[in-house]
Amino acid sequence: PRQLATRLHDISTPQLSGNIDDSNNVVLDSALVVAAMEATYADLDTAAQGYKGGCTALTVLLLPSNNGESTTSRLDLFVANVGDCRAVLSVKGVARAITRDHSPLDQIELRRIQSVAMHNPVTMGNVFRRNMFVSTPFASTVDQNDCCCWHQRHVTRADIGTRLPYVDAHLSAPVLGTVTEHDVAMTPLVIGDQGKQARLLGKLATARALGDYTLSVAGTQPPMLVKPFLSAVPDVAVIPLRSAETDHLDVIVIGCDGLWDKLANAEAVELARSTLQEQQHQPEDAQIDASSNNSRLLLAKAARLAAEKLVAVAKERQSGDDITAIVIPIASAFVYKNKMNSKNCN
Image (cartoon, rainbow, N blue to C red; front, side, top):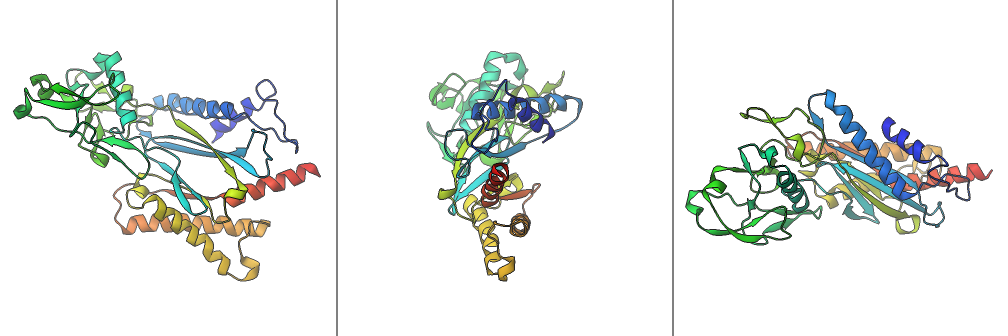
């Protein structure tokens, strides 16, 4: 957070952003905010060189819009991620994934991984091959996160001489190719047939992460590093949020893969919304309407309770991974912005 705050402070200087709204707030150009988030991830990845291990990352920012609309009625939601953490947005109860899981078998990710090998073959050592055979010409799965992932086909000596569909960095779709002895002898860059089974170089279940500079493939001499294939460049999405298009129960649910392994997007949103809704049945002086400081505290308490419930459900369903959940009520962001506008006007 500190690094990103510094970057955002840099771009709010007059040299980069002279946009001031009618309440005397600096309104940052969205392209500059995106660049600040990208630069922050690069900073963090560079700083990680001195440490063992790595991590996925996801960042959410809610900022005033710079498109000319009233800043009291619209906010821009900026979401950056590397790895398999996920953010899901609720808009009047409808769940929408606003990040893409960076699975090694995701079509975009696999093509990037293969491109690294194509432009720098030495990164594969004498262990891996670049092409990957798929089960049928267009066999892929579109999951609830709108990620399109290939189903890999494992080839054996019985397949030598057979023409099978494969994908590669220079191909926009699968084509037929003859299986060779080299294909059978070498290992594909991604090991595992599909979904959570997939591992980049047999090591990681994600194609993007911060750090992991020392991670190497077991049994290789000199050690074959995973990092050339592991990107720290985030996907950054900018999503407009208008107060008229949301309701008081809408939320952003952020979670790591241990949560999403066991809960569908819509299920997580419904659980979070129902937890906030329960506050509406509390005594009148404890109801959530986000219009007072006390209500905002109650809303924050309800959001924390919703996150705890999400983690509890994942644990009950025996999630085998780390479980983290954060619930952000959208209504509180609009109310906070309106209060700041009122304060500045006075």
